[in-house]
Image 1 (cartoon, rainbow, N blue to C red):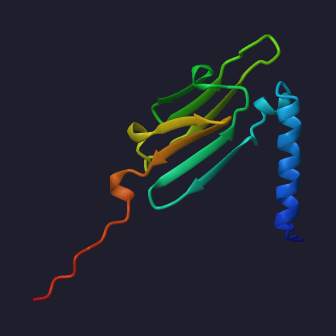
Image 2: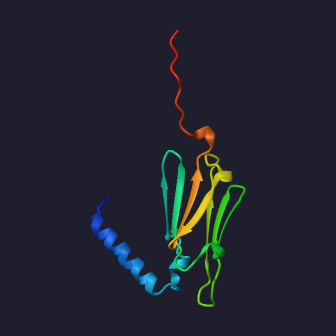
Image 3: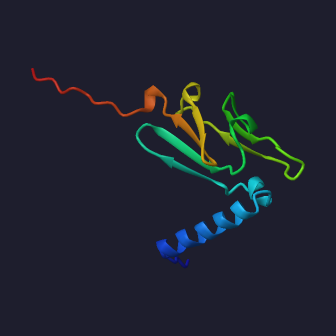
Length: 127
């Protein structure tokens, strides 16, 4: 197996160049790309961020049904087909607490952990 470390600055430069291309040509195929999102996690839950240039909150539907999260960008003109991304929500996540915001062409979906799996501090008792 061969592993290569990418120069972080080079990776960021490539990402910026790709983002510039899609700002110039917003109706390109990228809206339909499944690699157009990123997930991060911390002690509170999972944050999913997705580039959605040209889409506002009226054109984006975020729905939860059972263990599925669906994010759909509706076509705002005849130029694009929109996009749809589907995710599975595990039992460790609180689907009732999901929050979604879109700012400057970036959709952020916050999915908190269920209370049962969040770390909690246990008081040590002295007897």
